[in-house]
Length: 298
Image (cartoon, rainbow, N blue to C red; front, side, top):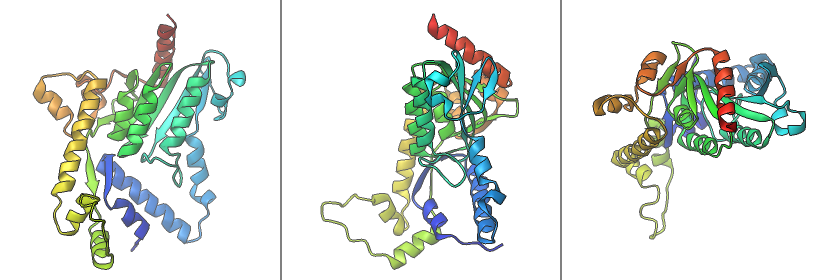
């Protein structure tokens, strides 16, 4: 199938990502496939877009039983006392809502509603994400750090920007031994075709006082990617510093360095490195959320 989409090319140009690239490529292929189906007459319902969005809606657990009403966290009077909110982070992390997934801004709104709901005692953030936009990761991390009640992570794939968010929670639980964690790194993704097209067809005129505006992109137009390299390195240093502040990584200096080099680790190895606290099923996550709530009340 031959497929071209200039909006996708623009998306990939000059984009700063906190993402596991293999995960990102798989997600992009899925996105392209959805567009291809829509262009060939398949409806949004046939593709299942609404079902995907619904699957990521918030749940409230009361006495271990889920109540499938995403709006419940916004209504304290209807929420049973002692409830646990389960919020989901799935797919590529974008700041705003996407085609079949909620953006981080929507998830942050749900988090803050759960904080304000006096009948919710703790929150589980269920994660299956390889990361995404650097800004999206920072937005979610900051919102988690605002918490007035325990927030724990329960994860399948928890990489890059998604791990940045998980690291800010009170506890990280791997859903199974096959769960993967890490990819703590930074990249810029530049589409060479778009960069060449832009350089050949676009003329940018900068003010005399704006010599450093878009400096990395302007250098890249001349084949110099050193400024992007420098920016990526600076962002990675901040990312590493934040993870080390939020988590107690295990091992000597060399082992910690390898934990932060962008590698992905299965659950047992991730636990041995301090990236994960526990491994178990969702019942363990519910039990730990209840224990954290009791500890908070003491």
